[in-house]
Length: 248
Image 1 (tube, rainbow, N blue to C red):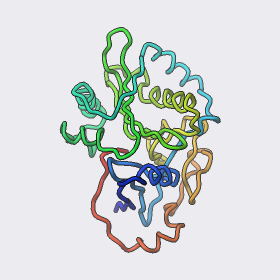
Image 2: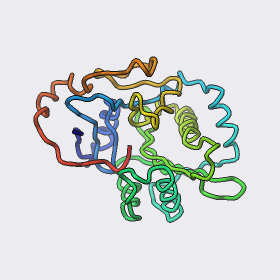
Image 3: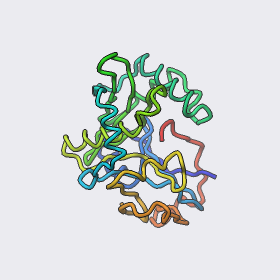
Image 4: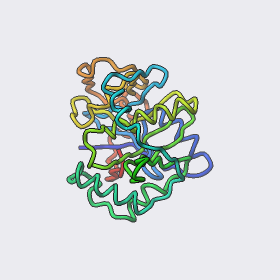
């Protein structure tokens, strides 16, 4: 049974709270910060890339080269019809049975636009055709950029667009002098999330602190990191309401 610890993001201190809790493994979903707090499972580990320690491997260099024809544009968090059309194509192709499969245009707009902190929509377009190829909702933190949710065209499977968007965010963070790129959660053994462990400089939040990625096969914790914190005793027997976030 899934359990989450969450808090509302509101007021003048929203940005400060988001910075602080993002550094403790939390993620943002619209006006909420959440972190898994399952009693018997620690599979979900928050992951980030240490920009200074990242160096692209041969496969990632090829991905960068294949996508050299894309142009990047950062905009305010405002949803458009083109974004939603691409979002639907992405979900129907990649996650047709996922928790977001039934999202309508209004829910999509809320995902993009409901943010109490500094957020940007990063759009990637084909420089020749002007076609929208990829989108990433990105939060700007005090110590990095957080990739809240990204999606891209399913028509270019060989281009590695998902990896390319991460690689480009590493460059965005480096250019801004920010040390980290927050990727969301990594689950050891999950094939869908295995790509995250292929980035050098990867760190995971475990045991109440960020640790450098070792061999991915070595990660098999039997308790969630939150359970080492004093607050865990206070929430251990509380059944939280179902609040599955719209992003991962």
